[in-house]
Image (cartoon, rainbow, N blue to C red):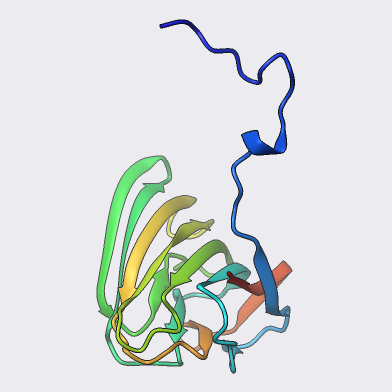
Length: 178
């Protein structure tokens, strides 16, 4: 088997590129609040993508579907805290937890919510998170599930202690994926 050269000497064409599903802008906010919410989410996409750049006071940043405060959100994190391999599991939480415990810590995460329009399926959630808190910088990949059988029409970003969540210069952005 010979060695392949990439890119080919003839150049790269569009057929050589991987097509990533394009996100369609739905909503954004840069307003500080103890409950950042998106409501009346259109039911016309395959998935939702949430990009969040916030600073939070003490407590953890949580994402809730349909403002559901029932303890039925489950998420698994795997990554590093201050260069130490770490696995975190949050079972039956009142929201998908993004590690952030220290006051003034930055939390940046991307979350994709699949099957959000379905009324007969669980809603898988995957993404990545970075936090400057939790006693050292942490980076995690995560996956989880929201077991609600209702379509997701709203997303809330809250602080576990009711403190203010302040969007940074990039804000909080919601996109739909066809």
